[in-house]
Amino acid sequence: MLTRRSVLAGAIASVAAASFSARSYAQIKGANDRLRVAVMGLNGRGMAHVKAFAAASNLQVTHLVDVDSKVLQTRGAEVAQKFSPTKLERDYRRVLDSKSVDILTVATPDHWHAKAALDAMSAGKHVYLEKPCGIAPSEGEALIAAQQRSGRVLQVGNQQRSSVETRELVSLVRAGELGEIYAADTWYANNRKSIGVGVDGPPPPNLDWDLWQGPRPRRSYRSNLVHYNWHWFWHWGTGELCNNAVHEVDIARWLMGVEFPERVSARGARRFYRGDDWEMYDTLRLELTFGGGRMIRWDGHSCNAVSRYDRGRGTLIYGTKGSALVDRNGYEVFDLAGKSVRKAAARATSATTDTTGEGALDVLHVDNFAAVIRGKRAELASPIRESHVSTLLCHLGNMAYRTGADLVCDAATGRPSSTAALAYWTPEYESGWEIAAR
Image (tube, rainbow, N blue to C red; front, side):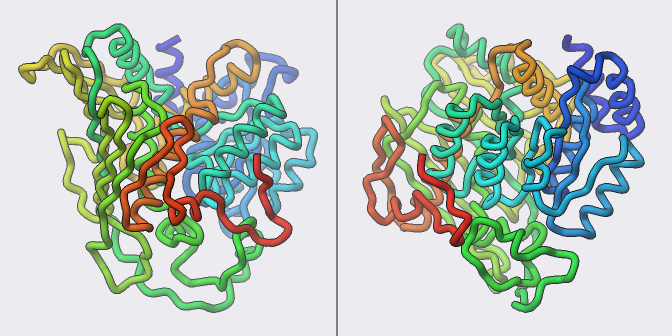
């Protein structure tokens, strides 16, 4: 099984190999077992979705969805050349109405994640949803309730949970090899440039600006917002915490066996390119304190790509018998003297700090997702409740930063006692686009 997965993962790095895999696997089983996939959002992670689903066994990407007609046509031509022709749709609702689609994958901006996933499950589709699972905590809660009602399979894109090596490390920790895990340091470093100062005005004719905004209250189009810089505007994005910290915080929480924190602290600022439109921090330290004084720390440096342990991102856990360093591509265990005693490297690698994060873990994550849909595996690698808890930790960090105060939280629910912080628990919606509470 590991050898087969390694081959598939390696195929991601090679267009020719991935194309061969997609066409070859289509012949293995009958069409009755084939899962048909629509990919929504094509400018970034969406193409990683296309490649991963095309490389997996007996799945076929049949529809592409994007509100930018130029992106849609370009990606459609690429997919037709490398894999197979697809139907192109501007509006995701047409795909949800189609009986020829089994799965919707969502790789849109954050403010679309929950709405698209909820509508898809309501239409009877399974969902592969990029992180974060919502733009605010209430959306994660709504997704949990909807998944339970619908019985559809909802996999969230915390793809390191499908890492063979990370899962092996979890087993070592559960067996007590590192003793009690009492702390974790996590980090992310990049060298992002200025986003400049944009100009309000009419959107380009290829962009359906109203549909791009979807569930969010309407705003004027701004020239430096689409397709990526929305991440750094509070109206649209969730900052580097929900964009990147959520991955390592999720792994640290999994390894430590903790859920909701008792206290949350976030200290940060915009340190670089202060004259541009970037509204958020680019440098921040998050501290999450759990029962028994256990702690997860995250250091984010969006515009300073200094690495730690030769890694731009990673997780270092501390135990009473030893420590372990883990990232998407393997792990290393150390004794209390700091001596390396065990090491495991991934058979095929995944990108770490670029904007698409493409690699072997995408294929493993999709493989797990499809196996659960087909009833061949019971355990979903990243179910919605687990993702909601990890995402909530990052939302709490944003709340602490925005209110300028440490948060005291209910360790059973994660809800902060601060009235000012709770104002960010549920977002505002454009009339007609509301997401119902759970």
